[in-house]
Image (tube, rainbow, N blue to C red):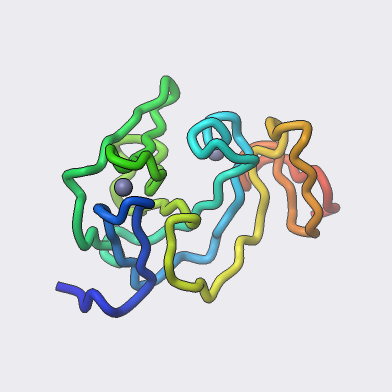
Length: 147
Ligand SMILES: [Zn+2]
Ligand SMILES: [Zn+2]
């Protein structure tokens, strides 16, 4: 068991679901795709990856509901308050847990370093920072730099 007081802790709005992540991988991103926008009711969703061995549900895992979209992506949320907590690209993606960063209570040592799926962002969503903006995923065309 990991020490529940260590690491990055977060949870849902009603507090029934709690997790701890001991280490984030480096690629934190803001995703502007239409599914993340709808799921979060926001201009974009911010996600960070954690290796499975560095992640643990502290309480309330049974209160989670999984929504699988037609493209196979899976978003998990609290069935009581609706908070988005995790994302996975498919059921076979078990090595990494993508955490909805808005659910964190801890400060992060890393900052997001990319905007992804900018090709489908809302027209009222104005990006005012200098991070690279990718049309789709990080491997896709970059819209705003000469990289
Ligand atoms: Zn909740
Ligand atoms: Zn997305």
